[in-house]
Amino acid sequence: MEINLTTPMNNLNSYIMIFNNVLSKNILNTFKKICRSDLNYSNGAIVQGKNETVDKNVRNVGVYSLSALDHSLTMTHWASYLQNIFQEKLNEYSSNLKINQNVSILDIQILKYETGGHYQMHTDHGPTTPRTLSLIYFVNDDYEGGNLSFGLCNSKGTLEIEKVSNRLIIWPSNFMYPHTVTPVTKGERYSVVSWAL
Image (cartoon, rainbow, N blue to C red; front, side):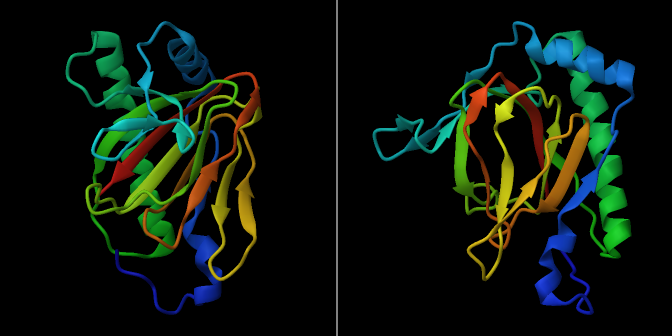
């Protein structure tokens, strides 16, 4: 990613961009029903070590991949639809920040955080997962806990993103943007995550 060097480094939060009302109300309501239906959410816990032990202390979430090719026509439609919407927002992100980058969506997943579900502080880019930009779309906001927070560079503080249904957040995937999802204390949190390279 080409960074605008005229942007002060103390303004790194300007690279976290929020888009509201991403889907129409009718489409959002239909998608909420899809997320709450009997999708086969797999265990999204982190696997660690040679013995591949599942560590739900790090990440405890259900994952439904929209990138797999073995979906029904309905889910294939949603995968294509969301990919187009997210790509449009990525282009807008680049334009708004006046950065020259040509990135494409790598993966799209629906996440289901039940009570106690969480994800410890982490970054999305790594040696086995090269990513340039990260996206989270808030499907619903009728739950408690489950807050998305960013660790602030050179600070012990955090930047918490307000939970608003139909909101998309885009930010760089690199080490400068560690983030967490705090434990859900009531209800179920549905979101869509995606990454671009």
